[in-house]
Image 1 (cartoon, rainbow, N blue to C red):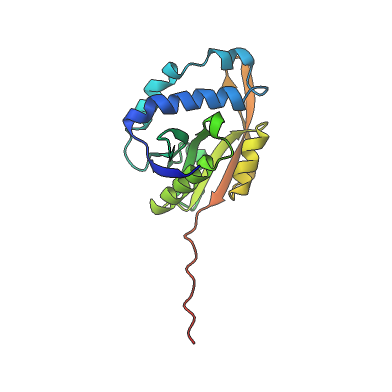
Image 2 (cartoon, rainbow, N blue to C red):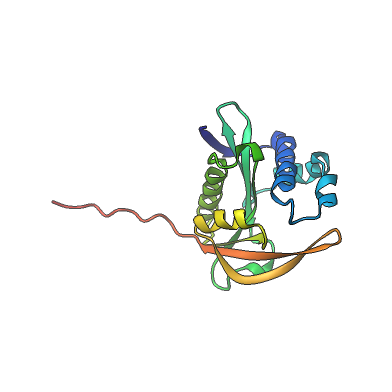
Length: 185
């Protein structure tokens, strides 16, 4: 499948909300309590996604659109949300969310939106970025590590319903791609 990345639009909110719920229900089964996952509805996430898709820069959502016009994954980035997550010396951005429609996992949709999000943060002047991921979410942690992110040792408890789930922070430096030096002959 070929993926085209574009900036998310307000009219993408229903599909992003659906992907968000489907991905949670698929990826977090066994991590998040089943009743919490089973109660999730895209309609309940729609107002938040409508708001996020309308935020000014540096907030941005990227979507991977397949040949069939369907969104296969999305990635949301912004300036770091919590001051405690900011690097002491570097302008810090955050990968806020990245999810793939479970039907399209492993097709490269997540990869292309990830790359667009990281490139955008760099273009916005960020030189360091963080993200949070459930500690027990091994598949996502492997994805992040394959994309240059490293767990920096920080863990906190994310409260969700009656659960307290450990989340770990990942971080990475953002640097411009190296330009190849011209070879003189």
